[in-house]
Amino acid sequence: MSKVIGLIRIIEPTAFEAYRGEVGRTVAEFGGRIRFRGSVTQVFWNELGCEGFEAVVELEFERLEDAQAWATSESYRTLLEVRSRAMRVTLFAAE
Image (tube, rainbow, N blue to C red; front, side, top):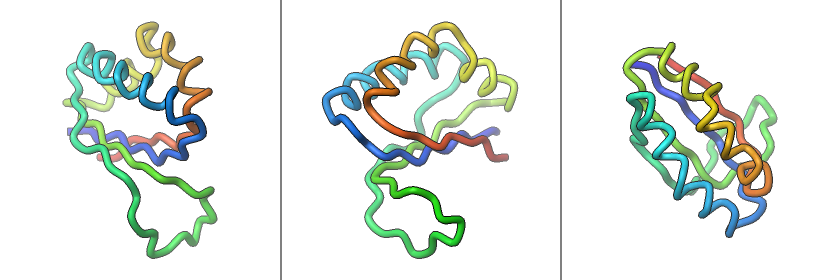
């Protein structure tokens, strides 16, 4: 199982909700699912000096290749314009 984790700083709430309403469809096209969405309630350590973030998302894919295919897909690329208005994100895979 491959996880994709996103640390999110929301910059435009209306655009964020629009993005959130569409991204799950693109994840499902590649066999993935949204395992968790939530607000950050407390940061205990930030030794890497990451910018502040308010939300987190965890996606799950069967294989890392599926996650890579999703992240570079045309269907996800159609959301990049609204994503850039909605948030700043750090997105990474973990296994």
